[in-house]
Amino acid sequence: MATTVSMPKTLTQGQLHPRTPWVVLGLSIAGAAGVVSLISMASGEEFSLVGTVALGVLAYLVMIVILSRQIEGSRKATDRLVTALVTGAFLIAMTPLVSLVSTVVILGSERFDAEFFTFSMRNIVGEGGGAVHAIVGTLLMTGTAAIISIPIGLFTAIYLVEYGRGPLARAITFFVDVMTGIPSIVAGLFAFSLFAIFFGPGVRMGFAGATALAVLMIPVVVRSCEEMLRVVPNELREASFALGVPKWLTILNVVLPTSAAGIATGIMLAIARVIGETAPLLIVAGFTASMNTNMFADRMQSLPVFVFTSYANQGVDTQAYLDRAWAGALTLILIVMALNLLARLIARFFAPKLGR
Image (cartoon, rainbow, N blue to C red):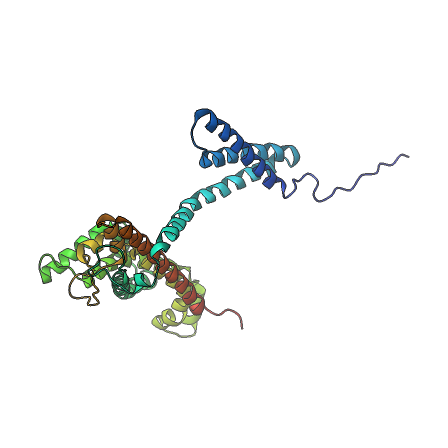
């Protein structure tokens, strides 16, 4: 009787080599560069890097799908196509962010020096000067807005999740949704109208700016805290109730510590949301070239307004004003980054300890 001997199949049979997609991508980009170069030489235009990348990616998609379909089958080819599309979408989304950050870092580093952080713009009409008055004003107004909005937003979220039932809870939810979508200029006009009633028309002060920022922060804090509180499993609440712990103590010792990480992150996101606002602060806080640490008197400068005025009201030395504007933008980005790092540290510190 004749016997047939079957050759053992290897694990890599019918699969592309891991380096094959990279080789195909490189060949596609190289071929696209050649085509774009020929077109540029024929038309007399400059070489287009964007066109090269777009044409190379399109050629890669076609080649990798055909190659994968021949070797791996239609299922794997479809998987590679979708993976390439998702990766491409991610890279496209990251391109503006990388471009923005790199541009701000390169241009902002020109005036990112000790003088920028130790001097104000008082009596400065050309080179020199700094933004210490704007940095202090931003920290004071944003900090005051956080002090106002965090307790209100957190207590509102606790009410909606733990106690809120009926028409009142629905009305609060509706108004929070409405406040989430209001333009920032409306918050500035509201704060200006409110303080004009007590201090007269033309009022400009730091506390009014903090009030406008608090109006913008409250709905963000409410929404983020509410979502984090809803994530806490009901089993934890029921276990606490079974031990005879009152509801308010359960919220204080069980619900809030469990959701502290997410709450801290949401609060920092709310602060980052308002720290770059310009329109409301232009209306109610104004702008000044001098240092002012009194929240209840006179105008107060902020970093976003400093960047705006440096760019919009350029003096004799245009480049000096532009350098200060870019340095202010870089400082603002670094402050937001620091807030996010602080949120991660707070989240790690307050996160519930699992295990024994």
